[in-house]
Image (cartoon, rainbow, N blue to C red; front, side):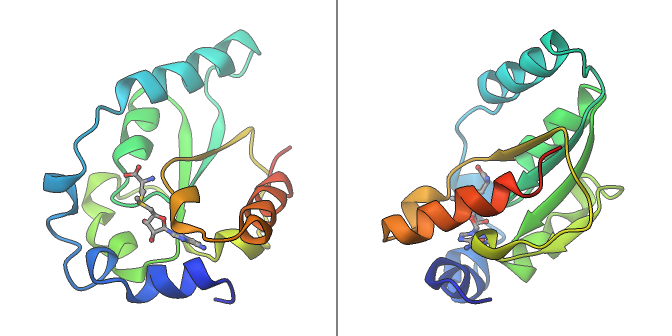
Length: 138
Ligand SMILES: C[S@@+](CC[C@H](N)C(=O)[O-])C[C@H]1O[C@@H](n2cnc3c(N)ncnc32)[C@H](O)[C@@H]1O
């Protein structure tokens, strides 16, 4: 893990030590977000897409995307969040990554990413994250 946000993600108590209450505190509905992505994929003739949910947290969005028939791999910089949320979608391939420097062997129909840019404190880091995500898309 090289970026500052990835280092913080690995150590931040909310994402590691106290990851259990995450879902009790983050309760904004996933449906509008997931519906918009799924509808866009259907419109572009990918109704059952292969999606990377980058910075998946507790897999709230990944589970909803899977329920719509997509295949989803999940990625995050917090080993604890990745591991604790496994039961929510156990079949999803889980990847421990630095979002700013992903080097993955798979190319995806879509990469989703919600709620991380506020964890990044520099434009350089945000630009690296976008560039890194672009390398994973078909
Ligand atoms: C606010 S949470 C959002 C999680 C999820 N997308 C959601 O909406 O519930 C931010 C997530 O970004 C992850 N994260 C932050 N910086 C990261 C980085 N550079 N690389 C990988 N994951 C990172 C954290 O571990 C955490 O799971």
